[in-house]
Length: 92
Picture 1 (cartoon, rainbow, N blue to C red):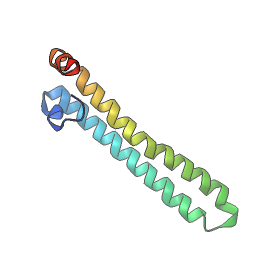
Picture 2: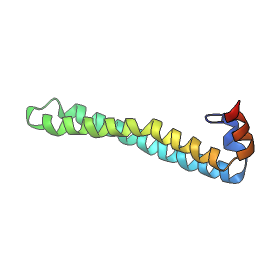
Picture 3: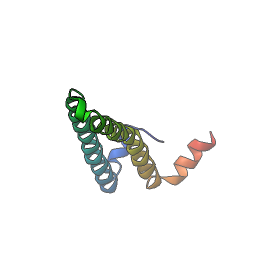
Picture 4: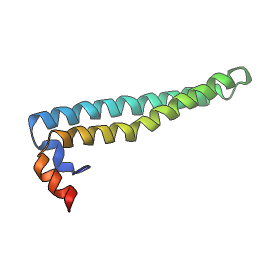
């Protein structure tokens, strides 16, 4: 089943995948924050507003990547899990 906290500890492979996605998630989070902070400062100056606006757009893209990464991680963890149990849960 997706989004279950016990999925991350099923095996060494599960733990490795979970750790990799946590690192990616953190990098994306920091990137979004940095783009928003820089964009915010640029917005104080008329000549930098257009660039600041683009940084807001890029930061928003990074924020949108966060739930996508979580879903991809969960699908990856589910794909290496017990497929019979997953199929039974899907049927019920």
